[in-house]
Image (cartoon, rainbow, N blue to C red):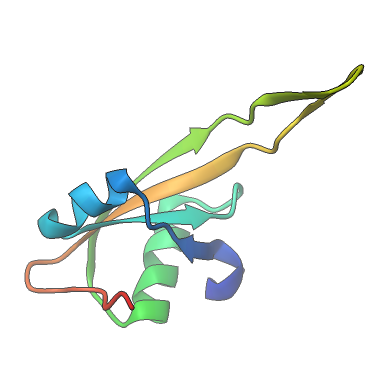
Length: 91
């Protein structure tokens, strides 16, 4: 897998804004990617040194339109901690 497929987006949420002063960033990643692949992809894409990666899967929600019941897809997210002095420039 290449870095563009593994790291889908850098998430800008209220929770991720709390993490940023601590050197942590929240990413939306591919569901099949493991921590090692995520670490290499972030280092390659953003030219930073990654200290650790924590992942979690946000379960999709049930949605209903009239009588049809559907489901939104599951989303895997990663909290990436950067090495001391490293920073990702966010526009």
